[in-house]
Amino acid sequence: MWNYLKAKRKGAIGASVVFFVAAGVASSALAESNEEKIARAMSAAPLDISENATIMDVDGTILREGSNEWVCLPGVGLIPGDKHPMCNDPVWMRWMAAVASGSEFSTEVVGVSYMLQGDAMVNNDNPMATDPNDGGVWVQDGPHLMMLFPNKDLVANLPRDPFVGGSYVMWGDTPLWHVMFPVEAKENTN
Ligand SMILES: [Cu+2]
Image 1 (tube, rainbow, N blue to C red):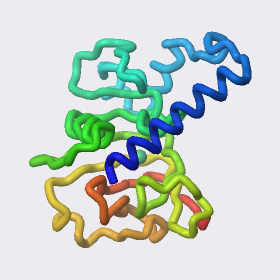
Image 2 (image 1 turned 180 degrees about the horizontal axis):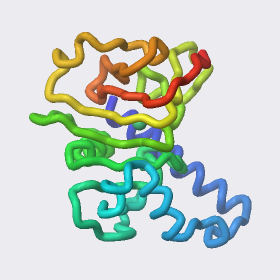
Image 3 (image 1 turned 120 degrees about the vertical axis):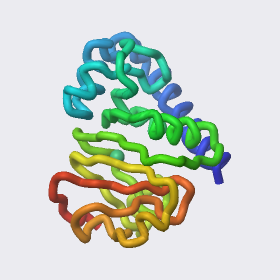
Image 4 (image 1 turned 180 degrees about the vertical axis):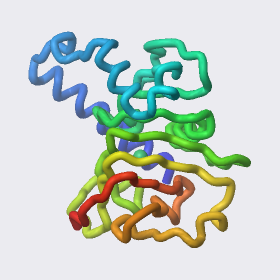
């Protein structure tokens, strides 16, 4: 499962590189400035977090050193080309690293991530799904927080349905399970 996910993501990155080469587009013309990336990354969380956060590009490059324990990124690095910024605490950074490397994740304490600019469209049950027409439950949240918990019993009372209103569990039957806390209403687009 993990290798499959990695292969899929790598394949997607490869394909986008080929596209740009084939189209003859100079990558420098499309490249965003570091200032733009930093501004977007910072917009994921309240300023008292993001002002002093480390800003890390999606490829791991440090764009700005920080002085608190938060790391803000200009996009979801696991999804090639994604531009939904996030600010992660150290627990969430460990989760991201575990997903990227395909290793197991566990935590003794809760983890918090801010995505105040919204998220990518995902299948709420299957993190590996890439086709929004596959009949699954697809969801794209606006501004939200995300939390990781030490064990799933702690969130047993929360809905799995993203459209029931309020917080819900995403990817609940996978090792990537976490709780979504939308702070804006959304419509059921399924
Ligand atoms: Cu999110």
